Image (cartoon, rainbow, N blue to C red):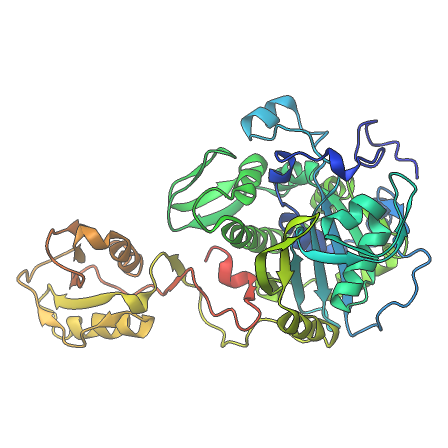
Length: 486
């Protein structure tokens, strides 16, 4: 299919045999989690814009037929399933941007990440399941798109399905592995990522500790940040921050997506024809989609999803049994947990939520240490009777392990609430101080593990806080509002 809007060196214009990939290329960013929900919200949100705008945007999408000649497909379930495939094209990023944001290296023009996005039948929930690119898979018999050779069924890493047989073989392989019928196929290129973020506006990210990665150039102190496109790309690419590696990166990607949804839904971009056109056209300029995903589908889904919010999205990865499963001739692969993954994909087919049900709670500030792990002794530093009890009760209600026995402090005219702590427990002290806006932090060597809070006349309330760890249920699922900035 001709693509006049792409350069001659675009990933759409040539195929690169998988054997050309280098070790350095294998370090390329697994980036498409950054785009998947943003794409869903921005494209599907078009229902609030109008038929003419969406039709105009649709004409910029390159069309493919990933379902051609497919047989013996899974039975359709409830809801709509989109397969999102990411490639690592970067041909439209400038030399200056490549240098500034550490984007050097030659792209392999192959699959980087494969994800299933399930939109519930009532259009009130999007379940996003990451399928690791190194997953152990068995591709069905097919014709190699690079050599023209006929291959029988054989084991590979999941990303090799695209390298050998393109979108069609990728869809066939994913359907075989998951038992989920794919309704639509979307393929995106990360070269538009930075411009999309910049067009939408800076995206707010909150971190409880400094994040530094010499590979990507990421260098963020603890606290809230508003990231531009290049900084956002560094944030979601980084995997050398700590020992969590890919798991930590996936968690950061989830945070970014949740914040992207918050920005898109709260800024009014979905209902602003000019802004929507700018953002969506930037995204869709690098999208390939199946022929059935057209104007009517966008409008129908968009009308239903105008009330979409971070809490409407849920993120997880397929359950894994062995993240370093050796296969002769292939190398180290990711082996899925068969029983748990079957249960996960059955839930998708049956249109069931993956995240555990939880009562609606007010927003909370994210902290590094869970309140339940922090022991607190409260003192009343004012003449006001009962203030110590009020503070103790409020901290305990928020989750802190208080003594339940507040005392009168040595100071009786304290104007600013004071938190004293042993420097060895500085992370706990900062988490406690987050619950007491405006409080003074003062290190006291030898104090021990118990934090001391002396309430001053400035005390008004205790701010609710939560730890980074959340109840993610049996599938390790989190919702967007759990990982976005409060």
